[in-house]
Length: 181
Image (tube, rainbow, N blue to C red; front, side, top):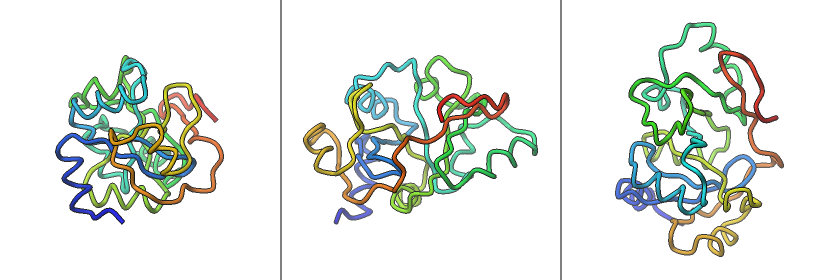
């Protein structure tokens, strides 16, 4: 078992982690560290223009990245959480462009996966969460698959993925448009 202090230090130093989520392993890092985000994108061979998802244990961990929302939109968003529902939300002025890509929104989710939520509480922040795979490839479903794919370039956190077979739903909060079901 990997200790909490080791995980926190790894994230603080700009390290990448691979960890279980609702449907597969995810790759993550400190969302405020541009070097760490670049490492995640390089590991995946993913275009920075696409943007990334942030997960949290509680909506307050996402607050620094989100524009102020009217109460109706806040209620809509929170009604789907915790769970495998990712919202595209207007980004705050302080939300780094390296997280948003070419978009004016940021993709966010309060995770229902106990292990992933524990990591966010342990790190005391939201985490980048993108599937642990090469862009367009099949996501890793075990720690061993992550080791084969990423070797020592990511700290692999063992655990079980959730029962979901598909990635989270992605929906635009303002328009209601479902991007991925």
